Amino acid sequence: MAGPRGDISESARVTRGGGGRVVRYYADVHRKARNGEGFRIAYTTDGVSFKHADSFDEVPAGPGDQLFVDTIPLSHTDGVLDLLRRGVEVYYLRRLTMIRKRREELRLPKTARGDIKSLMSIEDRWFKRVTEDFLVLRRMIAAYRSLLRTHQQLINKYKALSEAERKVLRPAINSLEEQMDALAKQIAVEAGRRYPAYNRLVD
Image (cartoon, rainbow, N blue to C red; front, side, top):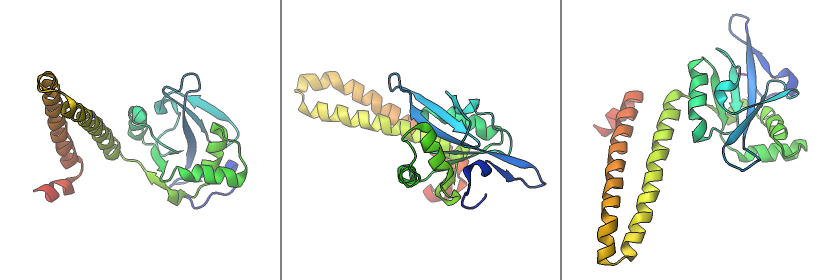
């Protein structure tokens, strides 16, 4: 990867091994303005012409190209997985706070375009390359944490109820615990398959 970027219009392409050209895409993920639900993706290769997409798989990147993005919402996991399978290298920003800092330094507007231009000026060392293993396990772990939060909420309610009311709630808690146990086993299997070192740690 290239080092610190200079003029953003010149940083969109870097030389690929063998003399080819790698296209660099830069993307900002933001909530949709209409109702705040869901996300919209704005992207560019030169900081001048911008396009929008509803999913990462709509970004026209090809094998060997690179995509630099501020964040990857869980709901966009499948789109990023599609890019990876197409041979695209995907990188996400390690610290989102750097966007605001760089935007203020460059005196850019607080818009998707301003954030993308800020992203383009950040050195490569602040980005982490995404792998399929990371994305798949992250989504599974997020699902488990969601169940865990719901379980804790039910337990708190359970403690405040009468004995008769507890009998009504107990089956729901038991069902949730079964789901958590099943998902935890799936995560362990998936982690062992994708990260052989995991099996050595738990054996």
